[in-house]
Image 1 (cartoon, rainbow, N blue to C red):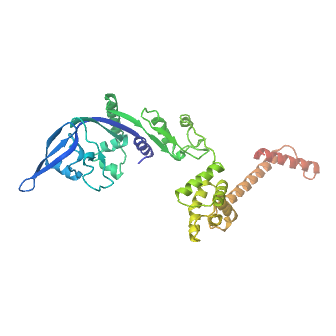
Image 2: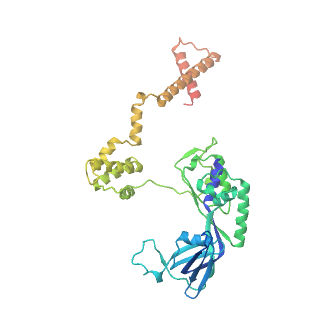
Length: 400
């Protein structure tokens, strides 16, 4: 699957379609259910009596309706709805008039009022689906199975165009409304220039969702190009965005975050330990201090304590290093490792500097060989002039 196809599916997942349709339903309280079986036992027929506060009616039942009633475990006293078009039976709950039929009932039992008015009603049914779900269902035969399997694959643009046209017709007829959602893209600097171009075009659509992107890059290269841009995002896309600036957490905020994290992980911590953990979070990073909570809790359990103390925090701090201490360790002992790219890069830089110096010397010799001024090193004055000219020439070449 291409990156633009993945973005397209993500966009259409975040766009909902609220479809409103009117259906004829029968809603009432079950008074009695009678099931008749023939001598062979293969054919079942029956009758059901439904009532409201104003009327009561008897309906004939076929084999499928009887099977649906048995599947829903419908009995006398239940309030149900029957979709006449689909033949679907929905159990709403049990009527309050039968709340005292049993001394004890399960917690899942729901009591509802007996319906009022007529049994047959027209009811608006609202379905909310995403555009991507409609795409998958219409992209191939038995496409609804792909919704559960997750293997949707690439969907042709012709299918999406037909669906967009149909949804536009439903909107004009008042049968459907668009529900724009929110699409969040983290580490957006990892997208390439093709994806950014697609986002620019997609945001111009009237059905586009609210797009929220996040990145932690400064001035960086745009992937797929040699150009640099703020946050690694093209300028034309940045111009369409409202940029939210962030600031580091203060000591009070860091302490409050650690307190909430301790409550979530069910860790009891002394005030002194929390102060130390807060100071560590300010000096290193918040994530490092959050990870120390559970490790310190394990140290506390090992010594059979009830609260995490300062000694537990110090123990964990000595066992697990943060990024700064790890980097400092690598800088000190880099020569002891089997592979050391930093040393190799230093050697390469030294070789490049030596090559540059040698090149400067060769050009200087060539320049003085072609000079019409005769320089005799035997004279102190001429020798100083020679040295001054060579240094000046070297400064001009190296830009220093």
